[in-house]
Structure formats: structure tokens, C-alpha cells
Length: 388
Image 1 (cartoon, rainbow, N blue to C red):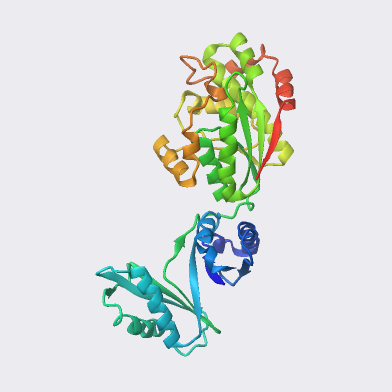
Image 2 (image 1 turned 180 degrees about the vertical axis):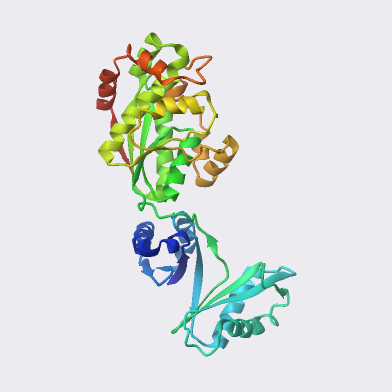
């Protein structure tokens, strides 16, 4: 069996509530490891250990790197508390990392879990270094910024060695911050916003508004694929599909063209509120970035916001498009979002949308649209898809 030591950071700062966050992280680790035969998650004082078959190491590396709340992790090798064995194993691991390099900076970092051991951490590190440095001539000691670090955990029964800390996602475990409802499209922005909320511990429920059959099914199919991608971070998901086309046609016939998109979005908020109440969620999430498009000016976000009974969270509000696309690439949704599609907000879009609408304007326009009737009809036409 092989072992990975998993460290967290933000969870360690939670004081009296720390055990709640640790329990959720352990649950999430157990969920992602369920497909590996014989895998076991073990809680220690200040970290977790995951045990698995050595042949699964590459797959485990990929999966652990996608668990929110994991700061970093290391694959470790366990040996007896004997300096000859420790140095021999350490030599193997460091040599594999150094390869044929001509010069590499190096240090030994010791954590002495067994405080009763007669040598302190610095003394242990010096002794191990003295056994390794003469053998691997390309190593030069650098105690501050070493390229290769041999990590040594000197325990009461055994010594654990590792040479690399793999980066995790950090943040908090999904599930500790309650539920949110994300207004998701198949573009770049809203999938990134959803991921950012997962990384803050929220469980995300999705709602997608579409204009089929006035538009093709591409946006719906792409959204399903995006949610499948995002499931890597939170597991199974719920996706509400709600048709908006009948309301859009009514808006085109009976409202000022400059207000169309804002009227669409106000109806989206009304319907998303229904999802939120049904799912007992605590907030709505959008992929809006300040002034990226006309509907995302401060004034226009406000005329939509006023309909929400709970917070509307906008994780991307201060990011530009390039930053958002870069993060979409990192989480694996960019390739799907690049595919051509027509979304509901691009349908019947006016040439000159309003930049600073007033609530009174929107309310006046809605008097001619039979809002209650459409809201109920669209809600009844919803489709709930369980993804994963």
C-alpha cells in the first residue's frame, strides 16, 4: 500500500469549530477515494492520511488536487526508526528527483512527531544530510529556497519520508457553507463563479435558462457537460433547466427594446428565487463582472438585485475577461465554453441596450407583461436533471 499525507491550512484556523470542517473534509476525501480498491482515509492530529494501492498513485494525485480544502499533499515512504534505513531510502527518493541535473539546491526538513526522541529536529536533519550529500555530488545546501526538499516526519513508531509537496486547491471543504443557487450558462463566467463558491465551502445548485426551440440545444448540452466537469469538485449536482422563450417573445412585443435584457434577467431572478426556496439555499450566484456588458453596470445590476430576497453573490465582480478565461482553463471548463452556442440573453438583443436603467422604468414596463402568469407557467415547465 502507498500513503499520501494531506495537509490543510484555513481549516486549522477555525478554533472551536475546527472539528466540523475536518469531518466534512474527511467525508469529501472518502467520496473521491471510493473507486480505489482498499483505499482508506485516516484522521491524524493535524492532517489526514490516505492509503491506497501503489499502482493508483497517478490517479490519486489528480483526484487529491481537486478536493477543496486540501492545501497540499505528499506521497510518503515509511521506514523503521533507523538512521541507516532512513538515509538509504532518502537517497533513493532524492536521486529520483534530482536525476541527471548538474547542480541542485537541497535541504532536509524534519518534523519530530515523537517529542521524546533524544535528538531535536535540527540534529536529525544534520545527520541525514551528512549521509546524503557526499553520495549525490550535484547537491548544494540551501536552507531557505531549496529546489529539492527531503521532508522527514520522525514518529514514535516509524519515519515517513517525502520529497515533493503537491499543491491542492486550498479553501474550505464543499458542504460547510450551505447551499447556493448559481445562474449558469455555457459561457466562461458562470462556471468559474460556481467553482469559486465551491472553494469557499458552498454546495452549488444550478439553474440554466434557455430559449429552445428559438435557439439550438447547444447551450443546454454544453451546460450539462460543464456541470459534469464541475462535479469533480463537489460530487453530484442538481441542474434546473427553465425555458424563457415565451416570456422573451412577449417582451419583444410589449416593451422598450433597450430594456429587454434587464427584463429577461429580472424574470430569471424571480425563477431562481423559487429554486432557492425549494432547495433551502442561502444565496444566488452569478458570473457578472462589473461593466463587462451593458447589463452589468452598477445601475443595471441594482434594478435586477432588488427582486432578490437573499444575497446575490458575484465572485467575479472585479475580474477581467482574460483572468476569467485563465481560471476556466485551470478548472477544465474553457474548452466547452469555447464551443459556439446561442444563449437566451443573446436572443432578440437590442442594438443599444440601456446602461443605467431605473427600477421605476422596469416596473412600468412589467405592468404590460403579466409577470405572475409567465412566472408560474415557466416554473411549471422546468426540468430537473440530476448530474453525476
